[in-house]
Length: 416
Ligand SMILES: Cc1ncc(COP(=O)(O)O)c(C=O)c1O
Image: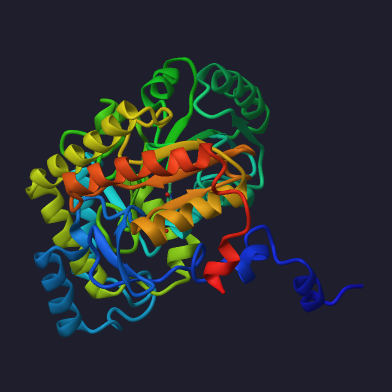
């Protein structure tokens, strides 16, 4: 028998094992000041490429005013209780209606947190007779929803439609026996690589197979499509998405999310999603704030235009400078370099300390060994100078990396 605390003391987990050396710098860094292209990190202003503030709404004066006014008017307590019991309001319902309309769906359901909402919706939608078919590079919230599933699940390699077809064949055979249905789950935009889910091809498969499609469009909502309605709109298949998830935590620069679908399924989710039934409702200022953000997202298309000018300049410039940015089809901008984890750490340190650029790095096991992924999130509040400076700086650090200058143990000295 083992004591749980002793086990924890011995095994810190895949990320926790780095806590001692990385905490406060590589993990849990503190970005201070107003949310913008430049923020304060360790007392100094840095150019920040790590925030999903796609449309620049985080610090938009109208948003700040709406948030502050709503907090003054309602406080953070209202409504008290879960929506089902005592926590419903006209404004919650108005927000759901407006989101549904924006997504060309009959209705939508608010969720307090995107992650929990996804887990809980998957849990509610399927029972042990049903089969889930999902993309191998799905976000943790999809994987964790799938983990709750009591029935069969079949995974297909990322965006591999041929294999998806095979999994749908298997699933079809399986549900013929169980009497269940098939739920296919993928993402609109994959948050690490930035490529889009092949929604068009997946929707096309509905001609051959009977299944419902659930799309997590956390990164696509507000950024993709002519009106910002997301990746379904971008690919012209919004109608083929049966259940659409969007978060408020990225383009809306807030917290919470929604699931838009048919009126019937929305009602079912309202009455069956355990994360919402057994939890207090979204506080009023977040609801009012989301209404304001949605109004700006819909009413100021110039925010999207500005965002995409920055995205195109950054991605085009990086490619021109010979950087490998993979197959991104979204704002998410990965820059792939070759190097070890210590080299990645030292490179990030150099970028932050000597060039005042703050971006996120992703290493093994999220990407293969020997690959360093620098992940940049362009926003509408970045400038063309930011783009130019970043590409010039990246070119310099690439020379250092290739020359072996980031080998060695610089990190502990700086962090000491
Ligand atoms: C694809 C995807 N789904 C869901 C989530 C979770 O959303 P939230 O931050 O609203 O909980 C995220 C956020 O990281 C995401 O990238």
